[in-house]
Structure formats: C-alpha cells, structure tokens
Amino acid sequence: MTDSAPRHEERPTWPAVWKGWRRRCPSCGNGPLLRGYLTVREACPVCREELHHHRADDGPAYLTILIVGHLMAPLLLMVFTAFRPEPLILFTIFAVGCISLSLYLLPRLKGVIVALQWSRYMHGFSRAA
Image 1 (tube, rainbow, N blue to C red):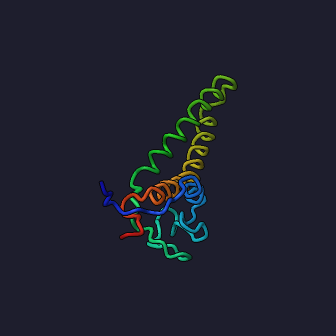
Image 2 (cartoon, rainbow, N blue to C red; image 1 turned 90 degrees about the vertical axis):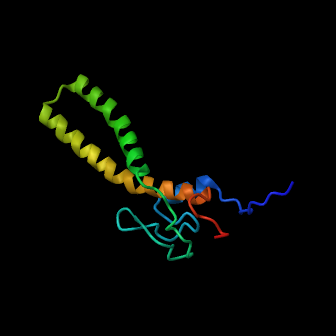
Image 3 (cartoon, rainbow, N blue to C red; image 1 turned 180 degrees about the vertical axis):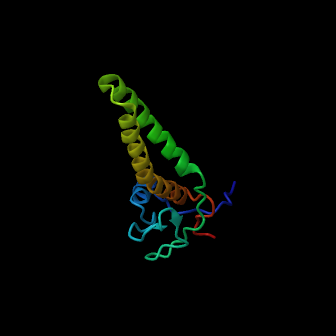
C-alpha cells in the first residue's frame, strides 16, 4: 500500500509557538510576524516564508477573553471580599487591568495561532504548494 500524500519535513511545534508568542516569524524567528498591531505580513522579510495562509480569525480574541476572564474574575472577588474598596476605585483598577492585559495578550496570541498553523501545515502552509 503506497502513501500518496506528500511528505513534509518535521516542524517542531513548541519552538514555533514560542517564536509566535514573541511575534516573530515561526520559520526563522528573526523577521517580524505582524505589520502593525494585528495585521499578519504577507511574507517574512528575512526568510521569505509566506505567512498569508493563516486563518487566525476570532481565535486570538476568544483566547484573550478566556484568559483575562479567568485571571481577573477571581482576583476581583478576592480584592472585593478582602478590602471592600469603593466601587469606583474597584471599577477603575480592574477596567485598566483588563484593558491592559487584553492589549498585551491579543497580538501575542495571534502570533501563537499563526505559528501553530504553520508548524502543523494547516491552511496552505506547505512546501509543496
């Protein structure tokens, strides 16, 4: 029985994910992955790896909401029960915290998802194409 599927070289997942977290090209790790805040480049300016195949869509936003919600909700409950701050102070601190954490995580999680897709040859990321 012959396997007609093309063989690809192995792409290690965790190094690619780490490069994506750093917002670097998952292939070489040197070129910037993003152009602007969330726009993925068409290709890496260093190694010329095509990056336009990605299909990150709403994944980074969902993961950001999941992480921020799971970190901030218990923290909000602990701060409220332990210190009983004024509602406006509590809202201000947690609003700034949620926005800051969201803005920090969103481009990094987009890089992680693009790098994961690249390492698994998903959505057109292949040498044969």
